[in-house]
Length: 233
DNA sequence: CCTTGATCATGC
DNA sequence: GCATGATCAAGG
Image 1 (spheres, rainbow, N blue to C red):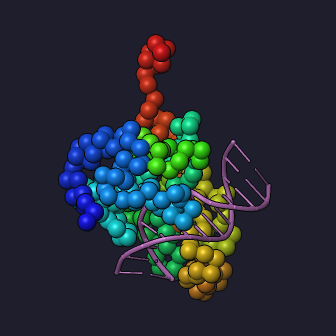
Image 2 (cartoon, rainbow, N blue to C red):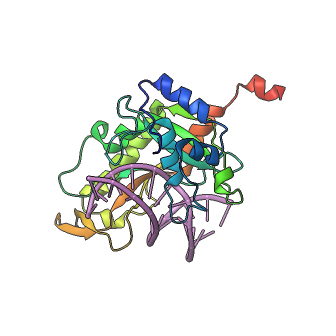
């Protein structure tokens, strides 16, 4: 039987667990959880995220809720290259496409998920075997006022297009930090959206993603050292 | 090299 | 199908 880790009851407890995780190789994390390391991620793209979830005691499962339900913290593992910057954008949540689903920003899934996030960087150099990749130092983060304003602005612009029937014109180039991209099992997966004349249309499910430049800034700020320390190196 | 659009696994 | 976890792979 695979060990199940109980959910953290406080942010402090979560951070303690995250500290214990830092520096471990994925094979070590997997061993502690009694899980096998797959040869690669091609047929198991979410494996690293689910491994970190298991170690930290995330519990939301497939609910549309932050991963750590009781303390309302979202977990995001973030693949980083040798330079320490993210290699991929970060999925946030699905886009509500159907009529009548528009909410105010503060009630939106994007805001509910991003108001408090534990970012866990994981090495993602393709030349390093999956089992030997190391977990980095986690960052417990909330957006500053500037970031929140920018995210809200992106969200409003994109949701305006969605609700005004301009969904098919949205590309991943819209949005400064938050973008909308397809999020589906395959191109045949369809859901209901709003057409040009307000009528229901069948369309590809979409997701909100954070651009790499945004998560890069989050990590950079978290790891930034005082100028005196940098000069002393 | 980076981003965009497409796709993989799993549970309900 | 929709939610979770994301990365893959091709084109700019």
